[in-house]
Structures are given as structure tokens and as C-alpha cells.
Length: 104
Image (cartoon, rainbow, N blue to C red; front, side):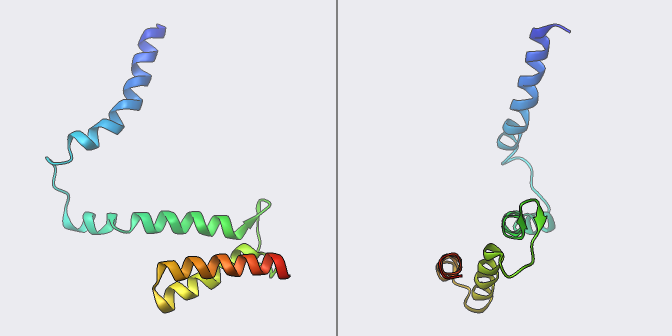
């Protein structure tokens, strides 16, 4: 295959998915149910990242009491559920993790 043709197709495959949402942004109206569903995407992605980072240690699931990441995430989760304050949740998670690392 011609190298220039390959480069052209690779550029198109890279460029088009980034350009099309901007080009169609004002012209296409999404259904209301899809718009409501898309509101949950950032929450779901962040939850998946945090759960994986806190529960997997050295390539395996770690549910032990020595997993400080999971314990701090659990404390932060409980604070988030009870008080619904983002700054307090972050501070409690960091303080809990630091205390567990230093004291235990």
C-alpha cells in the first residue's frame, strides 16, 4: 500500500472523530433521555477509576485491613453520603489515608 495513502487514512481516522462532535454540536438535538443518561457518564468514569485504584494492589483485589487506599476511600465515601460536601470528602479521604500510612 502506498505510504501517503496510509498516512492520509490514519490522519482522517484521528481527525474526524474529534472534529465531527464540534461540527454537529448545534445541528443535532439529542433525545431528553439520552441527555439525562449522559449526565451520569463523568460520575461513572470517576467511580471506576477510584474503585480500581483503591481496590487493586499489586495486580490482585485486596480487601484486607492493610489496604489503606480502600479504607480511606470508604471513609471518604461515607462522608460524601452523609454530608454531601466535596471539600470535606477530599480532606477526610486524604487525612484518613495519611493517618493510616503514618500511624499503622
